[in-house]
Image 1 (spheres, helix red, strand yellow):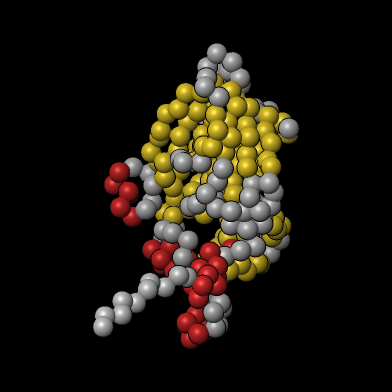
Image 2 (cartoon, helix red, strand yellow):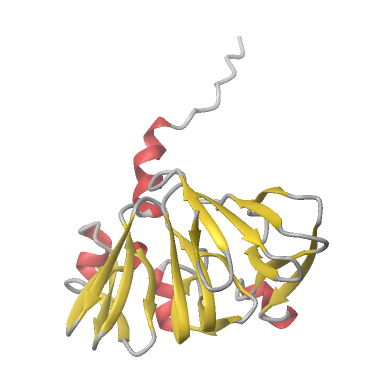
Length: 229
């Protein structure tokens, strides 16, 4: 078990199929990605919160978060993220981290979790959805990836394929562009990249969902043909 100022926790199954277990002290509350709860003690009470507002629901710019509160003693919750991959913990000290829209797993109540519009061009071409999740405040934050996770210190310029971005710290400037023009975009197989500038951290995932889908496609079961005589 690892411990922070607020919780004791354990991450098992790294880096392929990570599973998070958190001890929630009596009277305390943990924010958890909707549908990620795998196990829980019976003294945990759940409430569902909707981030982003109903006006943004149709654009996909909203997320559901469940809040678990321990009553009458310490409560343990087991959390299984949807994507098969790694899971990381950081403690924010009045800091801000931006996550891709599927990376958030759990956080302390003192962490404000909000959607942030990427801008039409960035969101449309990135392939990672139309928004980022902005996590800020003081407390624990857990997030996950598709594949293993690598933390990179950026000191000047750094380029990452948009499909491999998990998150990055506030203060880094970024823009989305092609590697070698729009001809390369459609024929090179490389897609779009995000160019970071400044100083901060970037977390990347070793696998890319689009590339995995392309790899799996030839092995898909094909429907049987009806032979009518």
